[in-house]
Amino acid sequence: MTNPKDRLNIIRNRINEIDEQLIKLMAERTQFAGEIANLKSELNMPINDEEREHHIKETIKSLCNKYDFDSNLSLEILTLLMEHSKELQKKACEKKNI
Ligand SMILES: C=C(O[C@@H]1C=C(C(=O)O)C=C[C@H]1O)C(=O)O
Image (cartoon, rainbow, N blue to C red; front, side):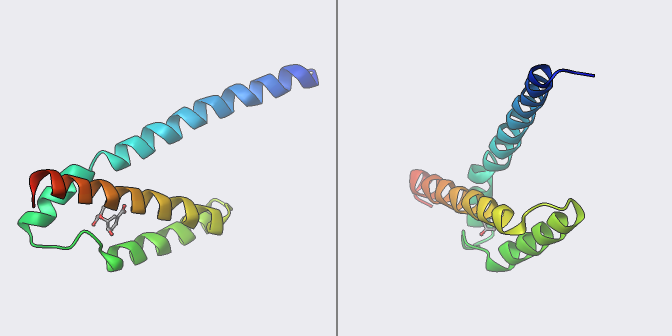
């Protein structure tokens, strides 16, 4: 039987690993912003795509149900990520004057 202090450290080390994966994935998700901005410019599409965001939100709710995770928190996080992506897209457009 692991003593409480050792068990706490084991859990904390696992959380460290998970946090790194979360940052890695958020960075990967965000790094597409510049290319998306260019593609939307070529396709004459607006940065904001409400239909796409609605689909993402519905998917998030479904995944939260599947993994028994807080959907309100998840939607808050994804909304922040989507807003960040759009800000980066806007900056990419301004930089290229597109
Ligand atoms: C990334 C895109 O641009 C915006 C940001 C989105 C996102 O971060 O998932 C989704 C839709 C758009 O409002 C996209 O159109 O796919």
